[in-house]
Image 1: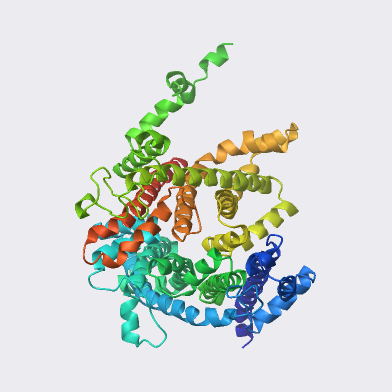
Image 2 (image 1 turned 180 degrees about the vertical axis):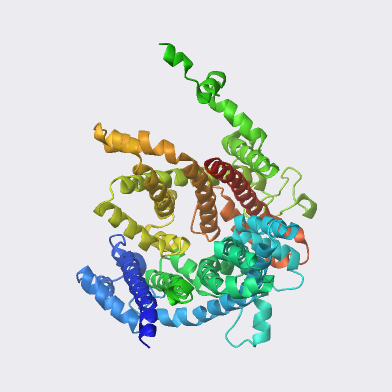
Length: 330
Length: 310
């Protein structure tokens, strides 16, 4: 019992440390994203509402943005609202006459976030098992023809831009799958899957290349370590070496690879959504940036950054929790 | 005197025979041993560089010249024989725009990468030399900047500053310099502790001398390889932003926005695959260059790291 409290302690403290660091990063990132509105050029009120806006309307708009208060109070107000699920009101749809047809950011982001998560989920379901399989088999058959082939193909796809892969897939598969992924909320699952086939496949190609190479490197690194050689030298069978000696140490790098690539997926989704006109959050962010709809862009950036940071944090924590050296300290 | 004549050293004898090879001779020997993929990469890069530099001479028409036969991609589809790759939606010659696109896209990516190396490299060297509060401040700042995906961050900043070429260059250079900073700092940290740096410091050399003359020459190989990787990354980011309509703005010819313009035929690709070519040509131009750069960097990394192991 006494031994157990001692063994759990270093893991827990490291995990708490990482969690603290992750929260701190999120805090700084939220400040950066918040200061976006503070860095806006001079008279943004007139720019959004149009030149014909009444002075009273512009004044009301400025008050809504809180430009009459000091920055740190605005930050506290903003972050408190965000934590309660209120991301503000979109700039678009505001008229100079004062009639307000703008929508709340949550209303805009909500359904699109769900769409993006669906696309990312489908991609992950295909890409994760596939790349783990390719990576592990390539590592075990190192320097074979198979390994070299897989390596050459993935090195090439890594250096391709996402849109090039997307158009290549369109050329080859346009006859079988729709090139417009215009999903709607009330679509049955089967049709939805059929519509997202091409975007999901594009992202799979991008992700698999990265994930497979990282898995392969992690496994090769592991198989080169002295204790694996020791296990082989003492005459353990090949399956036993892999299952009993290599695998417990492999979980951490593999989990890191998966989480890291899911984080990468978050970024890749932007371009792919635009290619296939998929109504996701990446497309929304691009639209809001080109129309300079700052609250929506802020909300999207916050969601992307938070997902990215949390996934990397998750990779860290899985790495710590499954590390045998930390679990069984001497 | 006679004692000195008797001492024999193998290194001394070899030293008499070995003539110091010039930089060009060493480069020629290395090139002869380069694998096919590296040769392929170098030839492609040379071709791109040639097209980019001589775009004004090579292009049959101007960057923004508009012709009456608009929106017909190919001669085979009823386009004009005078335009090999046809004209785009407002009648500009696609081949000319591809050639000018090389100049604009590669030029802007190159300037951005150089700027990002200047910022990241200088700060990284300073952080490695002056390992006090400045190093802590810069490193933690870079940690926070790197925790946001750079494409998302670039989009966010573009929404504030608007899409113009100077702001595009500045934003991407600053975001990308974080990675240069990390690499420079970690490589330079190993060199800073060397005795000759200490000696330079003791004889009173300033910060700038130590950076330029003592450390920089010794960390060049990883930085050169990183330059190739960063260039292709920056190049891809700019192409992606232009594709999203937020990078290089028309009428400047640029591959990313050409892909975007060409995509209007995409619904009809299932009837005739050549309709994908207006998008595939510029996208392929981007892809080929990044593949070529990656091949060369791969070879260079292999070569320099191999030499270090020996």
